[in-house]
Image 1 (tube, rainbow, N blue to C red):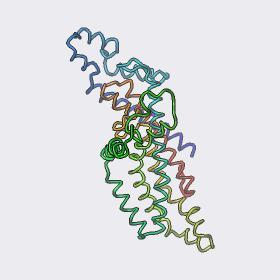
Image 2 (image 1 turned 180 degrees about the vertical axis):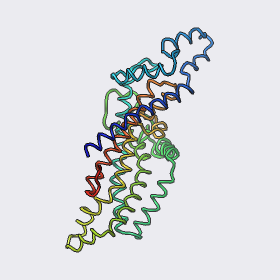
Image 3 (image 1 turned 120 degrees about the vertical axis):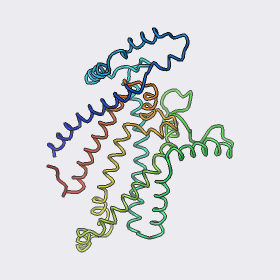
Image 4 (image 1 turned 30 degrees about the horizontal axis):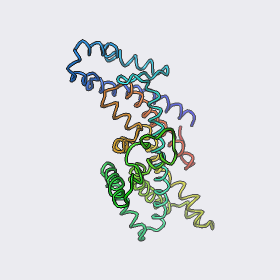
Length: 325
């Protein structure tokens, strides 16, 4: 197992480098951070040339990339081309915000989705199973952006109008109430409600379907019949033996979902103006700010690789028959 982990980590290094090169080339060939300045009639071509020299944009693409990479490996993530602020604190703040939202939504989805899937499998073709199946298909069919806007209109307009509120029960944008100083847990939790609901709807649908299908397959296996023949209670058979093996497909999906949280929930964060990694990425791409985009990419790819590796390790813990050479 140790050699397998080391080998996977070594293979991740070229993946990180190739990903960063491809993204840098895409930005370098399609974006010009100084293009917006040409609209201003008071800025001359000499001013733009001087700015490009100050930002290092007059050097070749390879020189810009190698300069960024050498600083990145030394722990210097550089400064934004526009704000001239260090990139690391902004990414750290955005990462924490995305982690709070993503883990909240995913944790709720995991508990509800697994519970629905297990109960639907144990009550196959019952009324609950039919309702759960229909609800899952509806949840999978709802576009995130449409559902997010629907919630914003409902809570931000109709609920306020019907109950004559001075402000929405659950805020429809941002991570804190404007004018708030410092950290307020209740205010932050209120801002998390609507984005978490949008995030959870589809994930619950996916987890419940995976868990139902996996449980139905496991419930008819030979080792469960053996466990029942030994006189074990059905509750123990389900909880100790069936669920443990049925969780393997969920582990794969959970690793993908948690790993993707590092890159941000782009659609959800953009609609709710939630200052996470997804919102950070959209802003940086719009500005062509590669010193911000490349660290974002490295963090995202690293966490995707890491959590896929963790999923492989968890496989072996859930099913002793799985071994890695």
